[in-house]
Length: 208
Image (cartoon, rainbow, N blue to C red; front, side):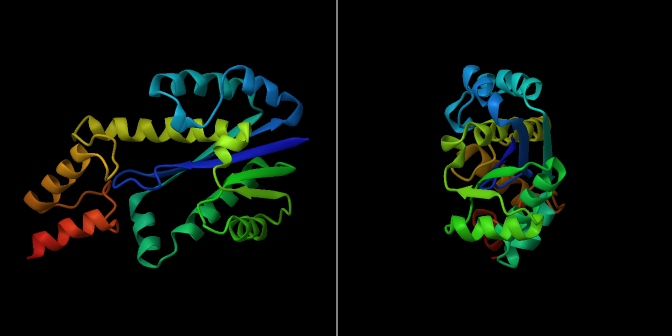
């Protein structure tokens, strides 16, 4: 049986893309992922994630990555549509990989509703949606590593020109950098998520 795991990276970030990744593997080969130490990407160091990334893509049958730019994220957040955007792109990944069963990490408080939405979008009834799926299913953990490393590469490219830190609002370096860019420059920055509340606060301060 060919199964698929799908997860995201960067949902809460102030900058950069939201990345969604999926992997497919024959169910009988899941033990190979466990044997190399695959687990939830949040529990791993950046160096370990990069090492596992290379091993994962050698073990899995296929993998697919979607990067959603800030402009698209913003337009959906302003419409209160972020969960749908994620469901739509997870469905895109699943349709591309075409598994028999797909396990997804739900961003919706109602994981069953999220699973049903993806099921309708893919015409696939075998969608298993759960909260913290990346710590419950090794195939989702593998997808979480692919997503996280892919997003880290995007942030690394931005860091060549900007002192962005991690990109998250909990990171003082990130907030300081975004504040400096928005308050002291007239140009727009396509990598900043203008719809995010911390960013909106900075914009309001600029307008005052």
